[in-house]
Length: 133
Image 1 (tube, rainbow, N blue to C red):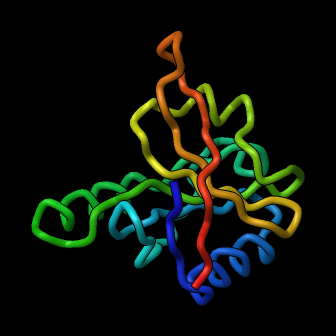
Image 2: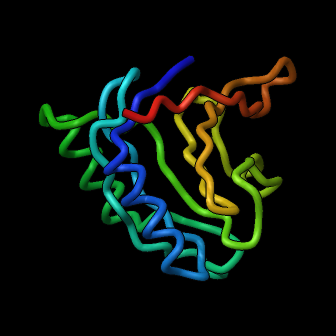
């Protein structure tokens, strides 16, 4: 699968990640083929240097906006300040196999993943092509 994102949006996410030693996070909005907007969210995790949890106020507002005809929530982004741009064990434990997009930033790069159901019903992350426009 290939998902497009503008260079400007990707640079916004990368800059946000580079500016913070904690995991940053936010929502990816748009269509299944294109990330059209991002909505940064505070990381409200108990240990934000190693985990992320989206601010529920931002998440609920985005769901309400989508139901009212606004942009669809495709998934989210987050950073691994001390790790690679691949899903961690914690990511797998917290993810739902719902085909949502996970854009992960680590070591100065961004990679896109889809959270799918594996044969055992648990989450399996499949890498998607991030088409930077």
